[in-house]
Amino acid sequence: MEVKHGRGYVYAIEYHIVWCVKYRHQVLEGDITDYLRQLLVETAIQYGFRIETLEIVSDHVHALVSATPQHTIPNIVKVLKGVSARKLFLKFPELKNKLWEGHLWNPSYFVSTVSENTEEQVKKYIETQNAKSV
Image (cartoon, rainbow, N blue to C red):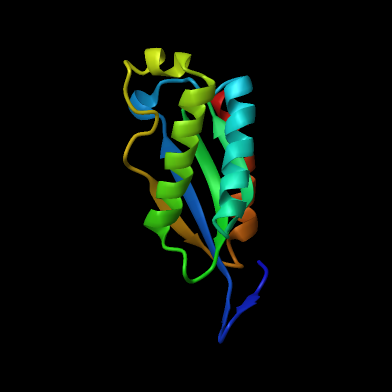
């Protein structure tokens, strides 16, 4: 875990964030997954945080996010879920049919803090998610 410097503070903040597709529909496959991966990484950069590790399973997403003290967990999740849902529906309108014209993401999410002692364990866990779903 990299220690970073801000104006007047030093920090090393990482979160393991998991969120699911509404009703756990298995719609995150193929081109949708590729585009979602690109969207999430670009969105993180645009909003000033970084996705260190990312795994997309057919019905949920795992992300290891590195953030500054100014980034709150609810805002990180809101940005990642909101931007990705809006852009995925625009590019893949058939997704709405699979979700009964509803929302892409379940409103809930899981988050845990990650320390330098657990970072490698969390990365390995995230990276093996697709292997577990097969």
